[in-house]
Each structure stands twice: as structure tokens, then as C-alpha cells.
Amino acid sequence: MPPQSEFKSKSGLKRIYAAFWYSIDGFKSAWKHEHAFRQEVSIFAVGAIIALILRISAFEKLVLIGVLLLILIVELINSSIEAVVDRVSLERHPLSKNAKDFGSAAVLLTCLLAIATWAVVLYNRFL
Image 1 (cartoon, rainbow, N blue to C red):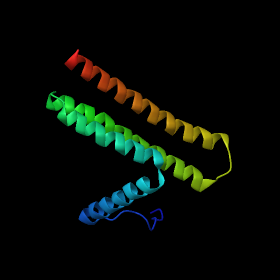
Image 2: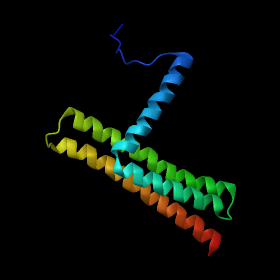
Image 3: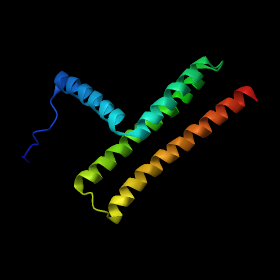
Image 4: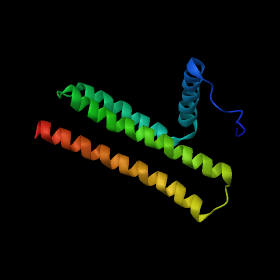
């Protein structure tokens, strides 16, 4: 049997409990250290309120809020990639640049998806 990491997860309800608190720590760290995450949380909050106020179907509200939530999810993954790259080395390297640029491109595509989704829903509903 291969050696187990001391950081390997627990089992059962202990795992779920620990995972919840690891996630809370992740949110706190992202909020504290990632300016883009704070900006995107602000956009999410405003967008969610607008979506809830709009006279559209519950499904349309879900879609509008969901694409904004997707931006936060992808930003957290991007920040994770950046943290690992920086942990390995702060030295400039083409592969490190690629990793960070790929994560950034993923965030950009998610933002474009959100813009397109909002445009289509609002256009179909109000124009």
C-alpha cells in the first residue's frame, strides 16, 4: 500500500465537517488576498439582487445568478493555480506563465458567458 499523506481526508461525517471548514478557510483567504475575488463577489451581490427583483421566471433568475456564481468558482480555481505556481517558484518561467494565463483565460471566458447569458435573457424578456 502506498504511503498516505498526513493531510489525507478523514472519512464519513468527520470528512464532511472538516471539508466545510476548509472551504470556509478558502473563502476567507480568497477574500483577504485576492482583489479580483472581492470585485467579483461585489458584482455577484449586485447581480443577484437585480436578478431577484426582475420580473422574470424562477428559472431565468437561477440562470442569471448561476452564471455569476460560476465566475466566482472559476476565479477560486484560478487563484488556486496561481498559488501553487508561486509556491513552486517565484522565478519567471514559460510554463508558470502558461498556467497563470490559462487560468486567467478561463475567468475571461466565464465572464463573457455571463455577459452573453444576461444579454440574451434580458433581450428576450424585455425587448
